[in-house]
Structures are given as C-alpha cells and as structure tokens.
Length: 125
Ligand SMILES: [Zn+2]
View (spheres, protein in one colour):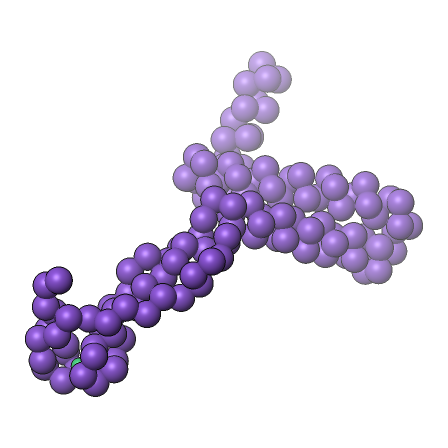
C-alpha cells in the first residue's frame, strides 16, 4: 500500500480503513481513511445512495408529499376527505411531472412554463 502524507501530524502513513454502513441496502459502503498515528480522518472514499436507496427515498418522499396535499386540501382548504384525496393525487401528479421534467430536461420551472405556453399556442393554431 502506498503511503499518504497526513496533513494533521505531517507523517507519511499507510491509512487505516474504517468502514461505515457495512451492510446497508440504501447506501454504498463508505470507507474512512484514518491516520494510524494521530487518528484523524484523512479522507473518505465510497458512500452515496444505491439505486435501491433512491427508490426507497422516492417512495417515502411521495407518501409524505401526498399526505401533505391531503392535509392541505382537507384541513386548510376545507374539502371533504374524498375530494381531498382526488385533489391530492392531482396535485401530486402535477408536482411530480414538473419536478421530473425540470430534472430530465434540465430546465427551470419558468422555462418549462414558457414551453408549455408555446405548445398550447401551437395547438390552438
Ligand atoms: Zn496523522
């Protein structure tokens, strides 16, 4: 193994590895490279969210967003539970499609809206 200079104690050392999230499905294993002399974390490798983790986070976010809309339409806007659920689905669908569109097309919400306006104008002609 190659030696790395520790910025903390200024020794050339072979970093000791410390693994985090060893058996997690949601995130990749994160390795902390620690200095064996002074014990400071010199740098980290690995980590990040796995595709499975992204799915899990997306589901959780979707549920939270949907329930927030139900709460909004039901308690704050005063609609019935059934109407609120329908409105929540509609709101959720709009928010998700706007979010996904801006992510995929790399547009701002303003740019997206202007594109939609242009499309509607074309349809009318
Ligand atoms: Zn050190």
